Image (cartoon, rainbow, N blue to C red):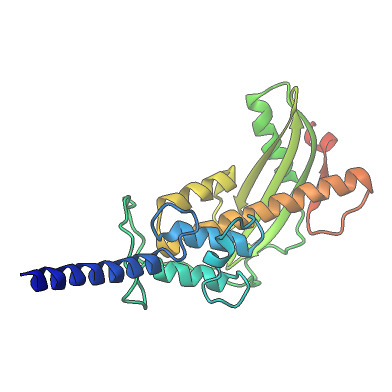
Length: 251
């Protein structure tokens, strides 16, 4: 009887050890520490790779999925694959608590910028969009006064985008960012928040796709702020933004 009990206990302990190892492997790349391996961990890794968020504590070692000593987009892709249980049968996919009402059937990819005869030239002057975006602000707040703005033209895939950043003053200073898709005619107010909400709504490849757009918008915003600061302090800017003086938008 004692021998039987000992065998049972040994089996239980052995099974528990294997379960613990499996759980540890599942959560090796749990960047946000929520106890699950999800697309959110891949998103954080991508933000680390692009320098938009600082790693703290053991986040670096968790995000370095391939162990090469660097955090890159390849690590984000690997963590996403593990979160979805792709290519590694020992990894348990974390349960998905929310499902989009409409799940896209094809995951889009960001295509390298190309030129097309149907697209405007990258040097086309679209600075008047900043004035139009500020007038939308002034319609809401009649006392608003434009201080400065910056406009960025960009071709992503086969579509042409105009990003505007406007600083204005009511009592304190504020700013507004807007993204115009010249190809489709779509206008997105506060695009950083817009794409962030989409990234949180969807999962897997779509989540990374919208996170990529959110990061792109943030880079444009930083470039626009640098442009305004440089013009105000040195009178020139070497980046790719087009400066717009506040007096042009207050007309």
